[in-house]
Structure formats: structure tokens, C-alpha cells
Length: 155
Image 1 (tube, rainbow, N blue to C red):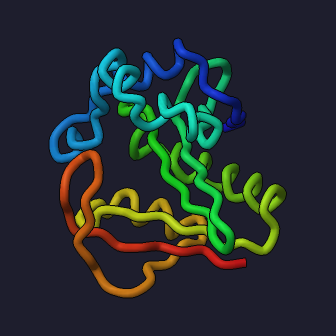
Image 2: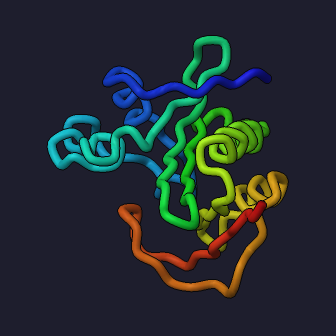
């Protein structure tokens, strides 16, 4: 599996907004493309647009990442095309992102937040060297309030 990273076009963003997850994962469905654009949410926020990249395999958009640099740490978020979830794309994408972050931000540690019920994601992150730090805590996100773990990867 050869994955490449590049910035998202308007067409890519529209495609991602159309991704629909099933069951308990439906909470990760994004709002309508036009609504997100109007409200400047996520990758439509002009101040944060460059923090987002898409991931492609053989010309197909397979995921996207949000890399938010801080002084000591880099916070990462990712999404995988719904029909590719559970097929190791998350692990492959995250490995690539970690390599790129190490090059661009040497010495900074990586952090991500995951809902505590999402064992599929937790396992993916652990496969790339992330460890749960601390205890479960409540946090509010655009997808709603929930219980989360903070996971870190230090170099």
C-alpha cells in the first residue's frame, strides 16, 4: 500500500463531506459541504486550512489528516474513507504522518484524542506507537460530548 499526502482541493473536501459511516461510527459523519463552507468549519477554516492534507492511494482519496502544530507537541486527527475502515489504512496513514511530522517538527511529541469506546482506533494508534496517557476524561467536540483517552507518542 503506497499512500501519498497532499493538500485538499475543494472537490476533495466536498467528497469527504459525503462520506457516511454506519452504526456507532455515524457520529463521525461531517456536516453538509455547503454548511461547513459557510460556517468555515474544519478544513474550510481559512486560518487552519493548511493543517489538513488528504491521503491518496493510486489516485483515490482514502483519508485525510489534521496536523495541528504546537510549541512542544503536535496534535493529530485522521479520518479514513468509511468502506476502508478496518483494513489497516489508518495505520498506514498514521505511520506516514508520523514520519512527515518528525521531519518537519523534530523533537516534538505527538498527541491525539480518541473516544474511549473506539477500540478499533485505539488498536490502530497503538500499532503506530501511541500509548494511552492518564485516565479517561470527558470532552466536547463538534461531534458531541463524550469520554476520551489522550494518546501520545514520544520520540
